Image (cartoon, one colour):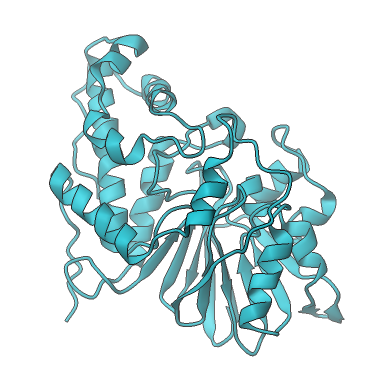
Length: 352
C-alpha cells in the first residue's frame, strides 16, 4: 500500500526534532567523518591531506554511499557489469581513498563521473578519479572516465563565469544544457535533472530510477541552512525550494511519506520523502516570515533582531561548514527585498 499525500507546511517542532533524531539514529555519519568535517575553519578551508578511511554503505539496489569526509560532500557510486558510475568525487585530498573505497566493493572500471555541482566539495577529485577510469565511446575504450554535468558546471569550472577555475582535465567532457540528460547503466536508467538557480546555477539531481535512489547534492543539506550566494554560486532560496519540490515529486514512499525512495543529501543522514518535505517546509516558512517582515518595512538589522529562524536554529543553525544563521537570513532578506512588493499581500505559507 502506498500513500502519496504530502505533509502540510505547519510542522510542529516536536515532530521535526523527532524526525531528525530518528534519521540520525538510522543512518549516522561515522565519528571520524564528523571530526574531519568540523576541522575546517570558518572560511571553509580544507585539510591538505586526508589520511582516514572513507566509510562505504549500501544504499539500495545498485547504489552505494561514500560518507562525507576530509572537507568533501557525500559521494555515491553505482555498480554493475557495465562498470562504475561515480556521482561527485569529493576533494583532491580524499580522491585516493575514494578510489580505494570503490575498489573494495567492485573491481569493475570507473566509466562515468557525474557532477551535481562545480563546488570543490563535489568535483575536487575529478582529475585523479577520471585518470583511473576507462570510458567506452564511439571510437572504442579510452583510458579516462567520462565526466558529465550541466553546462553551468563547465562554465564555473572553466572560469567562463566567476573566478572559480579548475584544471581542464577536471572539466565535464559531456555537458547538457536542456532540462535533463539520461543514460542507461547497469540495467537501469540514470537521469540527470537540472535545477537552475538552486544551490548553484548548474545543479543536477541524479535519479537512479531502478534502484529508486535520488542523489540531491548541495540542494539538500539537512544538517544546516542552505548556502545562498548568488554572486559566488548563482543560487537562490526560491530555486532551492523549487528543486526540493521536484525531488518530492520524484520520491514515492511506502506509507505516510516514509520509506520507499531514498534521497542522498550532500551532508548528513540518508533521507526519505518525509525528511525532504520537512526541510522544504522549514525553508518555506522562513521565507514567508522574512517576506512579511520586509512588507512591514523592517531593515535587515531589524529582521535579524526579530529572529525569524529561532525555532529551527537548534537543528539547522550549527554552521558545520561556516555558513551561519546570520548569513542565511541576510541572503534571504536580500533576495526577497529585490522581488517583494511591499504593497502586495504576503505570500501563502503552503508550498506545492
